[in-house]
Amino acid sequence: MPSAPSGNSGSLRPPADDTLAAPLMAPGLWRRMACWLYEGMLLFAVVFIAGWLFSTLGQMRSGMDSRRHLLQAFLFVVFGVYFVWFWAHGQTLAMKTWGIRVVDRHGRALTQGRALLRYLLSWVWFLPPLAAISPFGLGAGESVVLVLGWVAVWALLARFQPERQFWHDVWAGTRLVVSKPLSRR
Image (tube, rainbow, N blue to C red; front, side, top):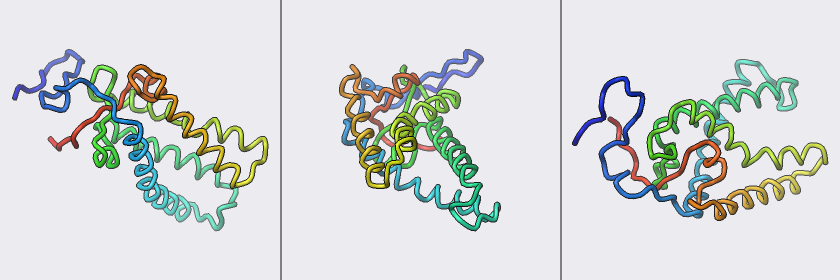
């Protein structure tokens, strides 16, 4: 197998394996949403550990502590590190399980900068409904319906994108493709 060129060209050539030999095909919507749901379950462990660490080191006694906004900012950064690191390496654990990989629009591995941009733009999944909840003082049940409704609408909007990609991926210059789990090299 030929190896990637060494030198200062600055461009990354896709690996010479069969994962990119086929056209860059987007996974089906159900597959991507199953991966999204599985990712959420895995993030529960990340939140648990990060929250425990923050509250232990910060000696928080209650979730209503005045430092809860600091905790939210800390979790935002922890999620960012988690996703940027995994996306720059091609796949999160959930993506490996569901046979999905994130690449740039040309099929190359993401840079950390592009992965960070994708992370920031991916908050479109949650920011619009969260912004609507606060000023209207919606209850828990109404908030859940609003968030889940927006997630469904946002996911279905991918049907109107010519390559069936999510819009935040289009804006970030990334795409989800069908892939076998990447091996460690």
